[in-house]
Amino acid sequence: MSNIVDSETSLSLRIARERTDRGWSLAQLAERSGVSRSMLSKIERQESSPTATVLLRIAAAFGVTLAELLTEPASAGSRVLRAADQPAWIDPATGYRRRQVYLSAGLPLELVDVELPPGARVAAPAASYALIRQVLWVLEGALVVQEGELPTTLGAGDRLEFGPPSDVVFRNESGRPCRYLVAVLRW
Image 1: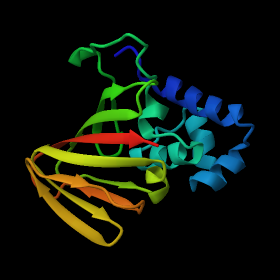
Image 2: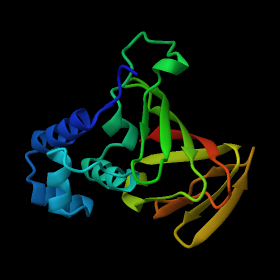
Image 3: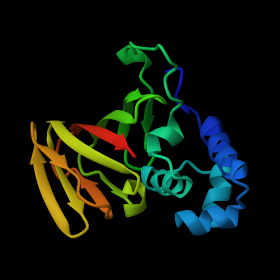
C-alpha cells in the first residue's frame, strides 16, 4: 500500500503539515474542527490515534475529504491499481475499515470500499459533506444510515443518494460485517 498515509507518524505529520501550510495554530484548528486542542496536540505528537469521526472533523476544517487527508492521489497515467496496492485505513476505536479504490487529482471522483464491523457506529459531521455529493451502495450485510433525524435501513444491493449536508451516523446493528461502496463527487 504505497500511497496511503499508512502509519501514525505519516498521518500526524500530514495533519501538522496541512495545519502549518495554512498558518493555523492548534487553537485555530481546534476551533474550526471542533476537536479539542489537547487531542490535536496528542495526534500531532503521535500520542493518540485519531478515530474516523475525529479525522472527518479535521478534514472538513481543512476543506478536504477524508480520502484526501489519508491518501495521496494516484499519479497521472496510473490507470490500473491492483487490489493489493489500494490503500486502506482502520479506525482504532471501531474497526471500521476503508479501502481507497479510486482517488485522482485529475478527476473529482472517489470510490471507497468500507467494511463496518457488527455493532459499530461511525458519526460524520455535516461539514464533511459541504463540498461533496455521494452515493452509497451496500454490497453485503445491512446498514442504518441516519442523516440528521432521518434513519434509512439498507440491505445488500440497496443504494442511497445523500441529501443536503447534515450530521450522518452509520450503524451496523446486525451480527455480521457490512460492506459498502461509497462514490464521492468533489465539487
